[in-house]
Length: 453
Ligand SMILES: *Cc1c(COP(=O)(O)O)cnc(C)c1O
Image 1 (cartoon, helix red, strand yellow):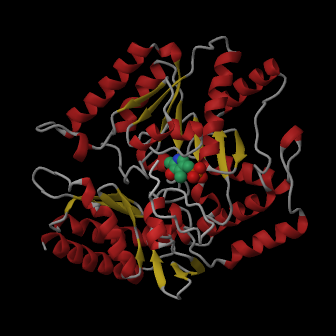
Image 2 (cartoon, helix red, strand yellow; image 1 turned 90 degrees about the vertical axis):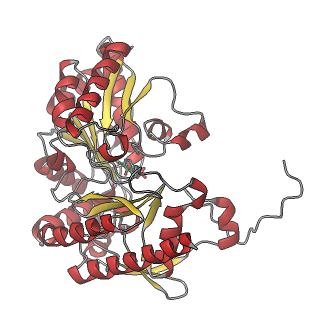
């Protein structure tokens, strides 16, 4: 322990998630007070374009009164209730039906939790419970990918393919990480995209054989990696890996926490990337960020097996006190109505080409190695040297520099390692897209100049 360390500033009582706690003591937090459309305002009155929809979720922006009204109405009718012991708020049952009706593949039932992480934990517990009930208790291993993000509960962290999980002594034994399907970064010199895909499929097959198919409970994958840096899979990825999983009877879980409800340009990322999952997890956009909520959708086959397993154990012994909260469900029903019936998804389809073309135009910038994305999400990957794709030394914190420079110019974008990512609200107009990327242009030029100096 360093006894002469300066006394920390304890003027703020707030302990920040995913923040550099040391530098926060110097710089202080950004305190936000108001929202309006795609903008948020801080306590000094300065306005920012929210280029990440908060954390991917505020797809309808920060002032949709229809959602406030839906919440208020539900708060007056049945403000709180649960779904244990066979009870269920009427609004929550309606939302489950609605989700089943719009699922990308046939689904039978929906379980509600409060966060994406809880939904992932729920799925793992379902898989483990089925394994035990069906006489295969050794079926506990889980397949994930390096670069994947699946949340921050103990299992969510364990399934996440990032270095920081070591901070917690995770992952535990039995979580196996496959290669990130990012051709630009992971493809070898001279390797074609098709050869790269073949290598990933062979790796999956070899991993299953090595570990023993009968020890693997399931594989989890985001249709497009989000917090890993907006990484679309190599072309043909899911079409190629799904037959391998099926042959070995390994269920596939689609983590649609980011990609669900329109972000990739289809209602579901599974539709954009040809995923045929046995289980689907949704969260962030389900309430447009106006309420904490997540959903696990299960196929009819899974539902039958869960029902049988629950007979073995007397019940399905799992649930969250505020899961299926009627207010969250009322908001989610309204979000779906706004997305599907009030023209937001149509508007989204109209702005995606402009968003993608401005994003990709940065591929020519001296700092940018790859400009990638789909739908209304994208990333600019920053390199020190374009031909070798060599990144800047990590202590340059180049992603951080760009995000900070953009912030000073009134745009919130998120640094992720060597990249910065974009996921603006669906309600953005074409001229707001131009404003956003004009700021990005000025920011990149400023940072480049700083790096040269
Ligand atoms: C955000 C996220 C999660 C975790 O959701 P929380 O609500 O933060 O627990 C899980 N999976 C993916 C793909 C996510 O982007």
